[in-house]
Image (cartoon, rainbow, N blue to C red; front, side, top):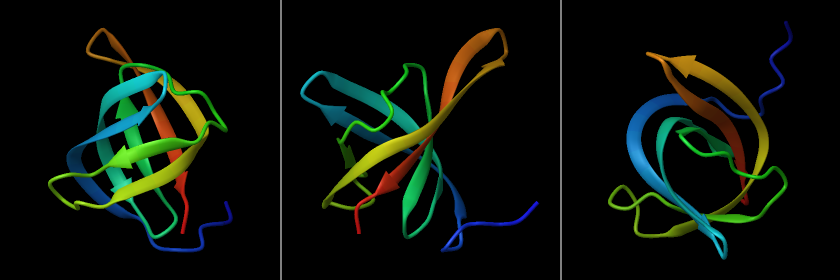
Length: 89
């Protein structure tokens, strides 16, 4: 399979907050690159919706991004969403 990524992805494991006017979620960041982040969430996030991303205390700055894909999976009898968020550069 062809790798279409523009930038390297780095595995990570830390908490972040994703929010907008109707949403306020704590998520687990599992990978990060110059163009986006991969997160695990217990709640869905609407695709193509602009969201704010707080990586505090990793960074005090605020990122803006758009979820571009999502998949649903089960682990230890609990359900989660794996979400790819494209960040604005």
